[in-house]
Image (cartoon, rainbow, N blue to C red):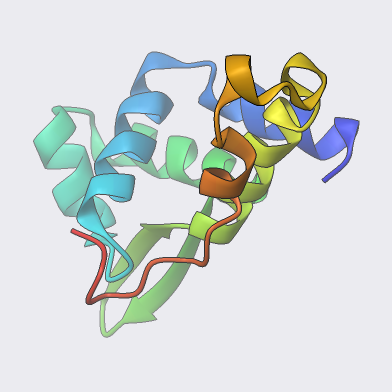
Length: 117
């Protein structure tokens, strides 16, 4: 990850509706959720939600795919993990007494549908 992609991701998250949608999708796991269900759950008009989801997807925080007439969205766990690792890679100059094992936790393998909930 570089500075530009980190800024894009953080900028995408710097809106209450997008942050709420992203957090909901992180909780939903790798199978994701339909865009309409996200909008309904967050009480956001579907057209506005589509705009927010597209912003998060451009920032590589979400992935989407079509399932019939629905568009499903899921958090991009690998990209999220890269952002968190980028933000904390120089944490306390690697001083384990302060940072603990934060870097190793963030770089752990991606969760699968069996391990995410």
